[in-house]
Image 1 (cartoon, protein in one colour):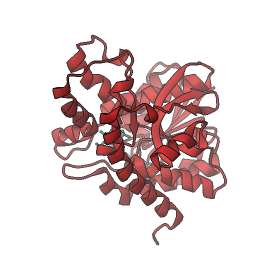
Image 2 (cartoon, helix red, strand yellow):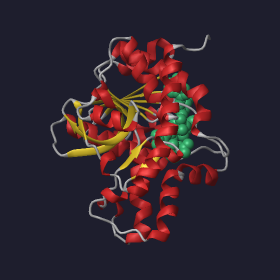
Image 3 (tube, protein in one colour):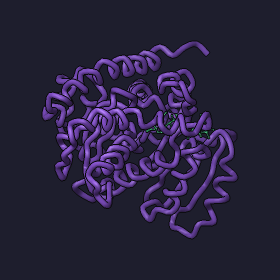
Image 4 (tube, helix red, strand yellow):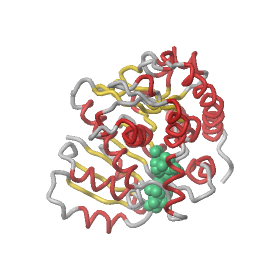
Length: 330
Ligand SMILES: NC(=O)c1ccc[n+]([C@@H]2O[C@H](COP(=O)([O-])OP(=O)(O)OC[C@H]3O[C@@H](n4cnc5c(N)ncnc54)[C@H](O)[C@@H]3O)[C@@H](O)[C@H]2O)c1
Ligand SMILES: O=C(O)C[C@H](O)C(=O)O
């Protein structure tokens, strides 16, 4: 029996993500939570003839608690998206409080659930979540994940323009670091099967992966950021978590985790100076089993990218920790 919850289910990501989860044979129960419109979204999805029993909740009448009760996996795409000219960090002011509130609810109602955070800025919202869970005495670093799968999906897609592979998802390209601009570090040296990127194309390819989010924000012209590709990526990661929890072996996904809390993470923490980092994580029945240290395998070109990543990422992490430890007065 797997119960999944989407918090932020009525939004641009929340709706297609809820659709994919409703259609998935891996989900038995699906709860949709949002501050608006969940009755409509739930009624609509409930007509789909799939396994998942679906229920929708609003904040009234203890809706968050009811949605979270018995949850195994909580996916969080709640919060505002960017408009052209904004950075992900510009979302901090509003989204930090939204994520904090939802994590407080999880700490109280379903502290053993896997928590998958999509809300930006991921580099800060995940540290916020960790601090809130620590303060409640409920932090399990093996079950807290920042979803960075869209960066992996973009790397797979954009490199296809060079390799010409028919199915881009067959090339595994680890993307590590964080989830914004130069904190995103694609590791083409570790691609499987190996890919050969012509030297004159590498800078542009890396830049497109690091700033792929901007491409969508600009194209949507004020109507938000990536939603459909994110729903696909978020579903792909959620499926991996559920499959691993059900005992499937050999599942490895890059995801943003608290390094000291996962086997092998301390070595990467020492090397990077970052407490949180996206790295390929081996997923198992209890969540993050161990991390792969591919940081130490970086070539000279990637080492330069990583130096820039550490600079930005450390600041983003501290900002989240500081917010959670000293929340602004309401
Ligand atoms: N991690 C990634 O790779 C990635 C990719 C794309 C977008 N994002 C981020 O995901 C977030 C959502 O994007 P979107 O396009 O779906 O935005 P959206 O505005 O379309 O939807 C957000 C939803 O969150 C809901 N919400 C607000 N406060 C809430 C609360 N306290 N509890 C529950 N729900 C609440 C809103 O009502 C809305 O339905 C943004 O922060 C965006 O930057 C992350
Ligand atoms: O770019 C954004 O703001 C949304 C998301 O983080 C993305 O990478 O598409």
